[in-house]
Image 1 (cartoon, rainbow, N blue to C red):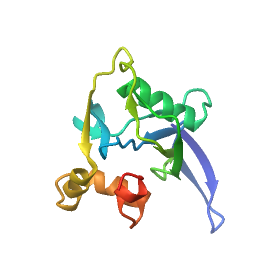
Image 2 (cartoon, one colour; image 1 turned 60 degrees about the vertical axis):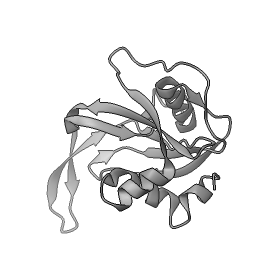
Image 3 (cartoon, one colour; image 1 turned 60 degrees about the horizontal axis):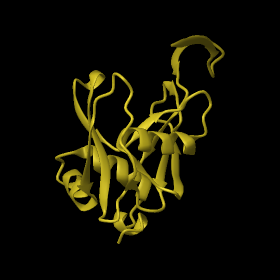
Length: 164
């Protein structure tokens, strides 16, 4: 947590608190069968299990693509040779963080066992892309729709991901 004294447009000053974060990646991996590679993990701040794609924090200035490759392999055991950077977004105005959204250009394949950190417990599963979008459209799980639509735009998600 940092705090700065800033000059306001009217010439006055104010304190602004903000959090500096090294940045993170989120991976949208879709198999040849058109299924998202997902993780289910208990997230303490939310006090609930959370379904999501692989994601993780940059390590010591690590290149975002290297982070995406490492996180997908470590957390799921999947890997892909070719990748596409989809977007860079800022998740919260009060946090200096960049989240890079990366998409394997080829379908990922399970190549090894996941290598979780000592205090990391998660379940890896796949979910048909159409099911994820339907859950979001019905309001049963807003996270999929919220995350996929800004990244994929109005184009068919399956077509954009090269799987339809």
